[in-house]
Image (tube, rainbow, N blue to C red; front, side, top):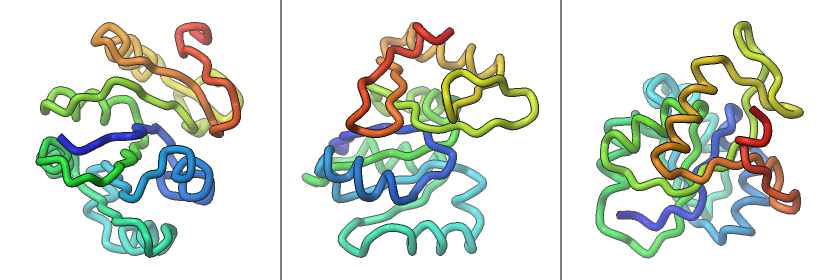
Length: 157
């Protein structure tokens, strides 16, 4: 299995905060974006790859492809996984990817979502998915930036 140093839900995926702050804290050198729709959108793939420094190895994959890659032999790389929703994390785990910790960084307000904390809004289905992840032993926490204190998501329900 690859060395996963951060699994983060952030609907912006690759952006300045991830590239600058989180990559420094985690000493990551590879980013794997997991999103079925984005992986099939050539324009978005190009945009996301341009958003990251050339020093990073960037991959944008479907859940199925990412599962195989993440379960591969450890290459010595330090990997950040970026997803938009908890359902993607659940699907990765269903496919055999071992995720112990999940950082919730940003889920924007949309129809059907209620504000959980600052820039984080979740639907009832997403809340249920977070609870399932917790039941599976995943440490789910809110930490928007590295210098903020992590908050157990259960305290926000």
